[in-house]
Length: 545
Image (tube, rainbow, N blue to C red; front, side, top):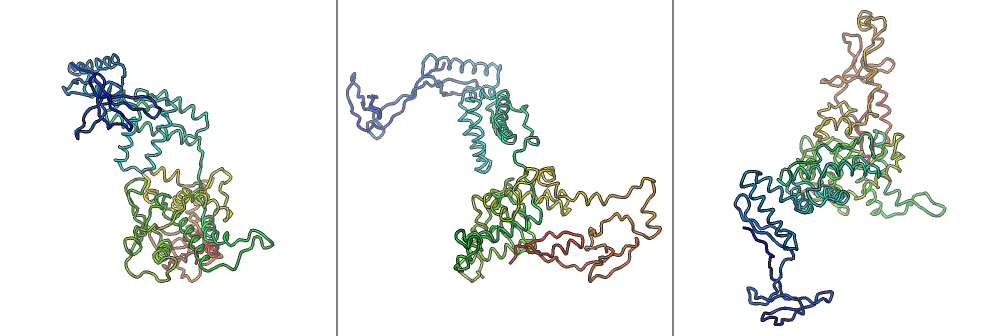
């Protein structure tokens, strides 16, 4: 047979308390902060000091459950009769378990249904922390659950229902909330409900059949990738803007001109700042790093001495929480080497450290990424003459540089599976559909390479082989031979310089170019136009001296 009782605890005597005799017992009397007179029995503590005896305001139930274990459960009832009713319900459930009407698991789930939702959410956040999720993710989950708890009036697990969530999704849509934001809230509470099932707090997830909003129809932010020309202009503007803005005369008759009388140290610091910002953009474009991942990098995570330079991204700093080794383009590796040497020696010392860097130096951040980088990017875009929003309403932000990286991989003919590995995506459709800008793909050039199909049913290729002509060529004017040294087809009226021509079977003269690297292009360099005449677009670009 169970029983109900109030828990008793002892506390030190309140300040200003007096001990008086009532009915032969010691009683402490004092006034609280509101001036109300309080009293409590006095008892002796373990050290012999006087302490007041306090009782809980609610009743507790003590009983033996269906598995024979003595349980001590809070009834949360201030009334004795109500607490007795809770005890009888607990004993009835224990009897059902003993008679195999319900299982012990179902009985335990019933206990969790009465627990306030805040306690379950707190336990869920501890679970996410044990799973080594990022603090930002846990904060976003908590914000979503707190909003749904208030908007849907959810107090306990029994209040979770698909009907409430569907009504909230509809009301949020009418209030102007974006589809992606609504889906984020739905995903947060659905993941919480799944955890409740796994932790035996609930029988099922009530949100399984709640439909997500269509993000393709209701996109609030559509990013676009930058073209190669825009990347060069952005980097050039980032290099110059800090110094130009600091030297700009804003008043007087010389308004708009640049000051010439500035200290070398002041000029040097602003040039370093511009160099760092330009190198941040270049690193994001040529590695596909996310902003948080770039911010976490230290000097010790950049490895430039091996045959293949790479950046070591720690698992704790990567979105997928697995860690990665990101290869570096040779030109970017050279820029980072020069930057790291400058970073190690500091701004004041002209001597590069020849010894191995100390642990303190290795833990220095690679870049001092500003907290408001998106605002800095907006100013750099304006200085470069690049509109933030294009004619289709698509915008440019910091994450657009990752979209640019994915689009450049597709434009350069990188295999989709290789591009997926470079982007570190788990789904190839994310790489090909979301992070590849179809507007920058050379669809027209691909269509011109399709074979000729005359209406009379003749075969133009057989006629060309018979006559030795090359009219209506299928291959482009300049096409790289996969798996061989780069070979370029000679174009009539535009012979390739310094090349030895050799005949081939189809009558087209081809040449094998020397195995040399393309010279890196400085920002605004006219060598790009010269290479476009030859039929291909260079992809390497440098920050300039």
